[in-house]
Image (cartoon, rainbow, N blue to C red; front, top):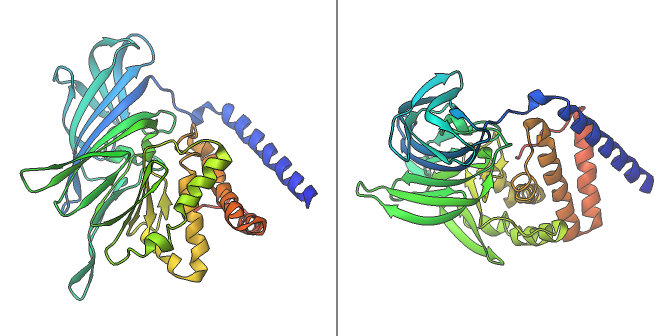
Length: 385
């Protein structure tokens, strides 16, 4: 047994060295950055029938070199109404070049300057935002309509102009305007809920820890929120009405996972809250570790109702929480390194099982993952992020 584990680790580190060497010799896997985004302020509202969003985004950035005159951001599916220098309101010239928007600044800037550019636009995103219709049975609504985002790998730029690659991190702020009977779940702390004169309401979130753009998210729908707390960290579970029992059935071990992961990593949970929200029609993704606000497929979560599905759902919940450390706090530089995010999070599923249920559970989990890997004859495609 000891020999097998030694062989496993030798093979692992050989693969790790080979992969990192290959990546370092492939500069095309990385992007050349000319600026560092500091903060995004993202304002969105919706035309549900047309599946259109109305966007108003401010991008604050600093140049990485002197004589900085031009900004290029990732952008698809957007029609711009205006592009302005926010500090003065002056219009800026811009071009749409393929999947980019290229902005010419009013003058040359230096690395000490903070440049704020405000974009107003409309979009009918082909990816990144999804409008899910209500579910009906005998003309009664059994599950309300939803709007949710999916940013990984590079879908955020379909709904707000951004540097859509993992090697740049910025803080974010969101103003999400929805119907008066809906909830919007975003990243970070909910600062306020604004009642608007037209009967809508706006949820204002702020995420004060820098993070990659692919982790920006929101979910809009009608939810019941189950509140809890781990130490001083607020925990929220957002479920459909009549499905509140899944707070315990599917998510009841969340605080144990926090405790175990903090103990194993020796790093306290690094963010200001943790929400878990179920959504419909999320089969392609299954789950995603959006920073402080994990999104999960309702179908996957509902498997926890059955004995055969309990371990599967517990693994998914553990996996996504583990990404708070491996992926969200420490992030891959490029997408060729994504296997490190996923590999560590998958390993933490097994590490959680061992601490919670004993060594045999750990060995069983590792063995099952290895068998699936070799049975497929190729790296396992993880169903959850």
